[in-house]
Image (cartoon, rainbow, N blue to C red; front, side, top):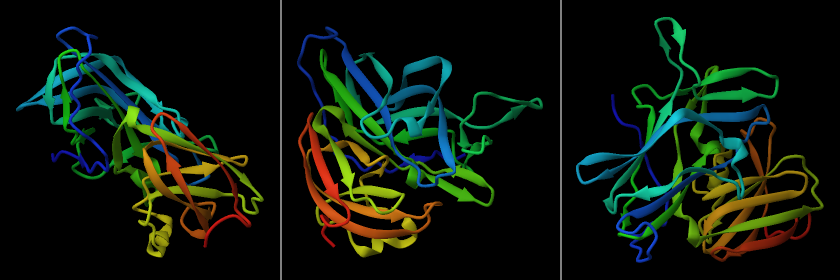
Length: 287
């Protein structure tokens, strides 16, 4: 079985601390967040996590084994929200990868093993979330992570559900697209939408100059860093590294398969700060 490797779109650097916390040990915090799904039919994407490991040299080191598998509805972790996976002392050193164990549907001796990762729908139904054929039930993240004695590292993993969830026939397949960021170097964009004339607006953040019209094909927007839905006139884009961005506003069809460009707006993010915007989608956007 081949290992499912995730291409990380990240701004990562070797982090070596010099504080006193943990004495001769280091300190690691890992959290998970999400960019939302496009389809209005989905109200939960439940990812079941069993353990966390990190690779040091040629060996995997156990970081955390959950006494009970943790069930995270990724759709609850959008915008500025995140779920803390790890917050603990760790052996100092250089780690090259992080591995997160997942649980998907399986039957042992005719019995279904619960809980397992799943998708829930607004009509009350639920179905198992599946993996691509041959993929292992884990996320292997290529993160160069250095933690000195008494130092700390704090990263947030953004699972982009709208890119990771693929509908194949009558089932949903999980092909994870994840970016990892150093949490303390990120900020938040919060916006209020006025003069909204369409029901479903998706807001996508691009590095300045990276958006082109070809991104719209099939409503995929593959090079967007993150995205958010404008709900009740408000949206939030979380865990963006400090820098300048181009926000792209599109109107989505109900099933999320087609998109119409409404316009663009520039925004600047400062680390550990919130950028507040008021966006007039009828008159205040660039074409």
